[in-house]
Amino acid sequence: MSRLEKIVKAYDIRGLVPEELDADIARSLGAAFVRFLGADRIVTAYDMRESSPGLAAAFAAGATAQGADVIDAGLGSTDLLYFASGTLGVPGAMFTASHNPARYNGIKLCRAGAAPVGQESGLADIRDLADAGVPAHGGPAGEVSQRDLLSAYASYLVDLVPGVRDARRLSVVIDAGNGMAGLTVPEVFAALPADVTPMYFELDGSFPNHEANPIDPENLRDLQAAVVERGADLGLAFDGDADRCFVVDERGGIVSPSVLTALIADREIAREPGATVIHNLITSHAVPELVRERGGTPVRSRVGHSFIKATMAETGAVFGGEHSGHFYFRDFWGADSGMLAALHVLAALGSQSGTLSALLAQYERYVASGEVNSEVADVASSLAAVKAEFASRPGARTDELDGLTVELDNGGWFNVRPSNTEPLLRLNVEAPDHASMEKLRAEVLAVIRR
Image (tube, rainbow, N blue to C red; front, side, top):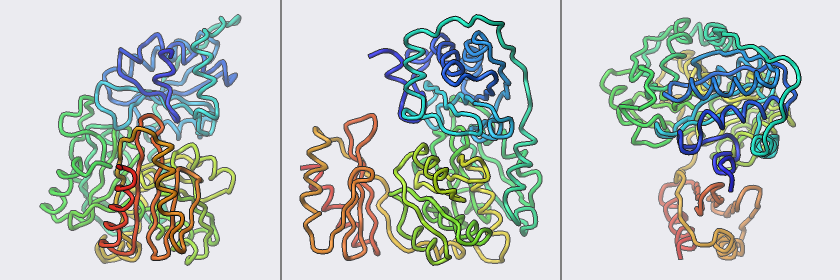
């Protein structure tokens, strides 16, 4: 296995610095990226990790050696890079390891217009080209120029969300996790009727307070306590590159990303009646139910941003949501933006006088297990055992769009799918009530862990 095979993942590049990802590799990938795309101009941005500026500079050196000009947007969030790629009409590279620990870094690549680059849409080809060695460019080298896009990015996002400027004044606690939201939130929220209490806004890639991974409830404890202590209307938490957003209500309760998907879908369908909304297959069944009730068309997708984005492009969907906290918007080039999701929550809450928990109650219809991982010796045989156990039950319906999904006649369902990188099976269960969910979860886990 080459060094690149280990760090080139399904959707991006990710590895330990400098053992797995260093300046030489970044330089080779920069050259391969522009060579593969035939690009004469690209844009880059990077997060607050100590290694990010150096990796971005090396990548730019590889790109310019191939004759491409590089627009360096400097420090930014991943959705700022998507904004740059979309507005400038050029491919982009974002240097970040998202929510991973401090010793990691990575690269997220996109084509012009923020179109995704994953294993099946060019990433494997770029890896192979970099591995083989990119042929020298015969013409003149490109140049690097700097451009500050933060203000334009902030204005663009706020303009996309109806009613957010006119909402009632809200008290908001925001946990940036020492990540890039510490840079973007002050610029975006300057135009909003919101009193912000900042937490961990200092850009620090060593993550001195907690991991910048809000999908882990442990990393939301400080935010929950602060919201309750201050009597705030809500809390927002962003991951390291600020492309994901998690929400805490006024009681300190963690809001399910499926509930946020339903809320935003409701708003987008009201704006565009009959619109299509994408949801991945581990999102709550409340989402497609609500979309149909509002006159929209729900479309189910595999888990993963490249699948969501591809499905959005095929269907012209106005919005897409994943249970991992990624939210995708057609008017943002089909890309994901945690900040846009946060603005929709502010606009919805600020348009009425009630609390966030009361507003969201209509979207909370089922009880979910959250993702439960199990290490297994043989992924295929474990999946086959689960299918054999549950597919024969009366009224059971199965499909294998992504792993195995089984829907039962009592309203419960589950999905089991393999990890892309580890010998793990990932289980998600949902049922009409807590007791039913726990019973079904225990039954499936018993088969998986035999």
